[in-house]
Length: 275
Image (cartoon, rainbow, N blue to C red; front, side, top):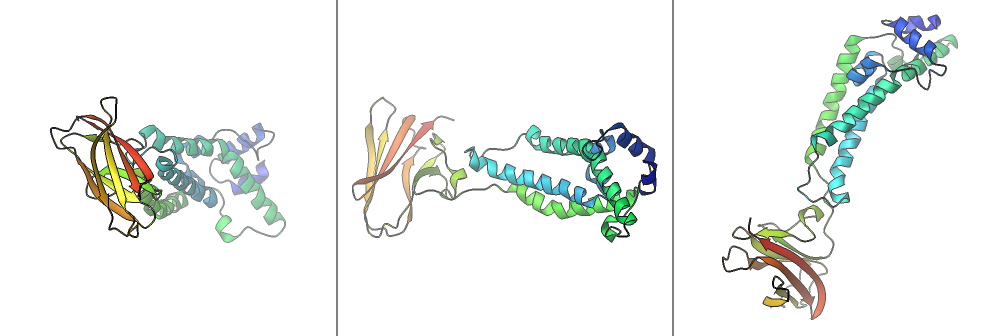
């Protein structure tokens, strides 16, 4: 192993000992605490720039998955990652660095030695020998700055797939813009909600849209409201449905049915409760 010492610099004896202790050092050569704690800083200091970049790319990939999960798992817009969920990928990445560092470094050093012996030195970017604390600090800081903008974007962004054709009930001034803004059985709070009905589907083009609103809280359907709209032509429509601020309005489950020219188009259940 001493033939690789010129490529190792600081702590050469440590790496030589690790590689001697394992019969297949290219696969696994023991645990590296420095790589575990410092991750990309350790990699950059040993001129393993691809490995350092991989750290940030993998973390960005995790953030992308985390941004997709609320929609994929139907968790809703209010879903947020727990601290453990956010910390887990960092711990896994650092553990992977601790496990793989010595083996990866072995492959780099032996490849450099083989290329130089053959008279074909590595490209300048990958020709660095030993340890460079300056490279570790500067390169990892530069990569962190490059990754910061997409990371901040992914922290604040969540994939919100477009709505399927149907009807949706909501509270507020703006109708839902995607699946994350809806719930299968929405809950509204009495004295605090003005419930709206939102239609999205094929263009009405003069077809009559009619809704029937039922109260289901007494174990039987009780029709409490209905309205027909024959003059709209667009593919979306928002309507005032129910004023939950009315103190006379009973709590419980409701259902709204929407018809297009007397053909049932969709139905939606929701609940009104006291906050």
